[in-house]
Amino acid sequence: MGKEARTEEFKVDGKELIEKVKELVHQGNIRRIVIKNPEGNVLMEIPLTVGVVGALLLPTIAALGVIAALVTQCTIAVERVG
Image (cartoon, rainbow, N blue to C red; front, side, top):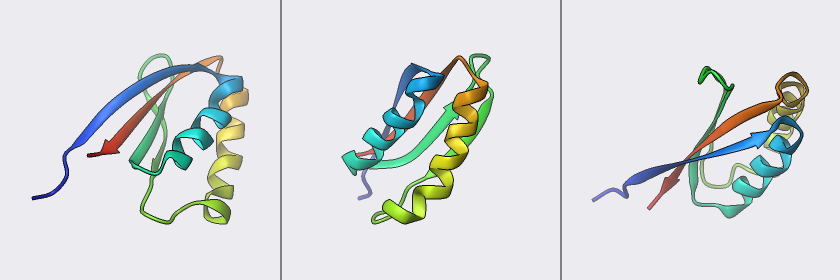
């Protein structure tokens, strides 16, 4: 049987967005991260597969910097495996 996914949501200030996403990526049991604005609209969706870290995420982190500069608060929805 496949592992079930569960979703958690975190509300963060724009200035905390990049650090929170980096922290979540390093936890390793995450399938997907979705960044939403206060109205609930999806700003960015980051699918994570095993081993996708480091240099492959640099363009994504740069895009997160732009989002962080534009929003005062956002929600991070995290889909975890198992």
